[in-house]
Length: 134
Image 1: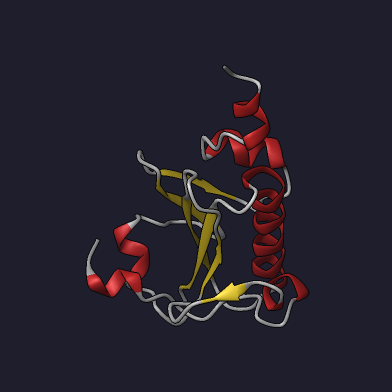
Image 2 (image 1 turned 135 degrees about the horizontal axis):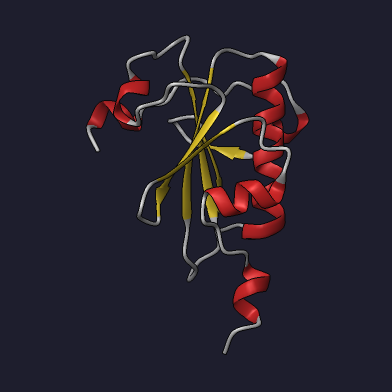
């Protein structure tokens, strides 16, 4: 990952309640961590602060809160501000999410309103599924 890619645009949903409640760092990433567990790094690509972008962020954050229980980080990249960042992940449609970590890289597009589709598309294993295994 190049140094330029670690700098993301401002979050699309700055005014939304979901975003204002989340902690952020200098890159504009929403962080929610618990030590000792596998962390997911998700990059959400949007085009400005549109209703679709805000909904996509809210849906993704809801799914992460419900199924990843603090084991995730969301970086929001506004392609209106940083269009060159779309090349690295080969983004052709928006909104899009790219799972950077853990490998392998996974991508999905849409509004992320269907939690099952998001979990399957990004190959995310919720904590509840892991607890059942021994």
